[in-house]
Amino acid sequence: MAQDLDRRSFLKQSGAAALMSAPLATTARGANDKVNIGWIGVGTRGNAALDWLNKAAGGKVMVTAICDTFTGYIARGKDRVQTIYGNTPATYKDYRELLADKSIDAVIIMTPEHLHHSMTIAALEAGKHVYIEKPLAHTIEEGAEILKAWKKSGKIVQVGTQNRSSSLYKKAKEMVQQGMIGDCHYVRAFWYRNSAPNNPAWRYVIPKDANEQNTDWEKFLGPARKRAFDLRRYYQWRLYWDYSGGISTDLLVHQTDITNFVLDKTVPLTCVASGGVYRWTDANDDREVPDCLSAIYDYSDRFHLNYSCYFGNDHYGYGEQFCGNEGTIEVLNRQDLYFTPQLLKGAAPPEVKARQQVHLNGMKDFGENDGAINHIRNFIHAVLGQEKVIAPPDIGQQAAISGHMATVSFKTGRRVQWDTRAEKLRTL
Ligand SMILES: NC(=O)c1ccc[n+]([C@@H]2O[C@H](COP(=O)([O-])OP(=O)(O)OC[C@H]3O[C@@H](n4cnc5c(N)ncnc54)[C@H](O)[C@@H]3O)[C@@H](O)[C@H]2O)c1
View 1: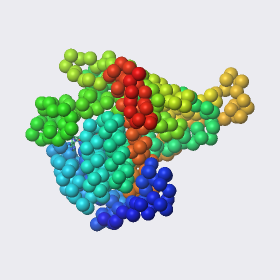
View 2: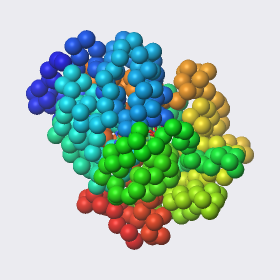
View 3: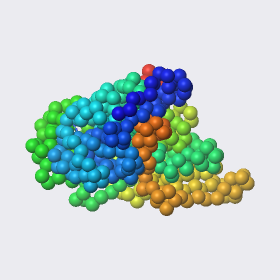
View 4: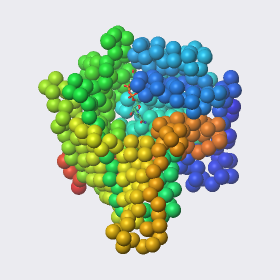
């Protein structure tokens, strides 16, 4: 592995301020002259992303190790690495053993939310660059500790809010900067889903052969409160507060994050959230997180974000509507961008009237399903010292804070306020 550039002298050369938000130019090469990746969590997203990494940076990376606590997924992941990359990865049940392998340059962590904090910090302390899935962490305090560890480490960290790497959203940002929608004080963001009665939201399929012997319940629980083995919690962790913030940290953070990106915002000032379990109420369904949630955010600079999510009707899909006084940009289902000028029944100024409607399609115009492959490529290029990551931990923390604000407001039934100076949430 090549030596990292001396961080201090690099900071001097390049200006500390820019770098503190995104460390750059550490280089890494495995003995095989590729970035050696250790992969922690090869479940639903991890298994799919093994392939995305190859599409993003095949030839520059090697997945030399995988770690998971379900033997079925370890076997599947190993097989997939052999098929995609042609090598046989080392396999682990304990991520600390994977981290002890000095030949690993970077780790990709795709495990449940409550494990992000301990795994990311341990990886940084072991000298690895880290791609950590969103949300950055399970609580605001955990996120702050990751930020500290990251700054101390000088390593590259990319948070998995991949919309930032999507060409459609980059286009939306460009259009806002060009003034196409005028002043924007209001965004509506929403995520609607529905499914058949026998397929409740987030009750993902539990592998038929999974049991207490071929999973590792203690390792799954990690820092979470101890309780008896429960397959539903293990595979459907999003439905329980101990492991997830539900809608707030699973879906909403993507949308507050991309609003921040497109409009150059950071953390909201206040949030009030409301909702409940309204659709998936079967007596045998012990879900804790709401299936219906609305959250209203006010930022300190006359900006309002109106968020809603419901798992009982998907007619409107998901997306964000950036509402300016001169036009609207909508990005829908991560696939379509529409720009529509505000014509005001003919009363709009001539320069606004002259603006043409725009429709861009992610697949047709950019060959992109969403930003995931670009986002992973950006991480690898950053590890190689060629780019800055677009979603470093401070950015990931800003998005996560808005998610946690919604959770705290929902749970307490109170409006909450973010105190930027104290870096603390207060209930009002
Ligand atoms: N960016 C996105 O759009 C997006 C989409 C989906 C999921 N995600 C994120 O990806 C992460 C994983 O989500 P998922 O849907 O793949 O969940 P999943 O439950 O399908 O996969 C999690 C995997 O982690 C493994 N695991 C659990 N405890 C472990 C431990 N202690 N050590 C090693 N492995 C362990 C499980 O066995 C499982 O294979 C989450 O953070 C989620 O929020 C992001």
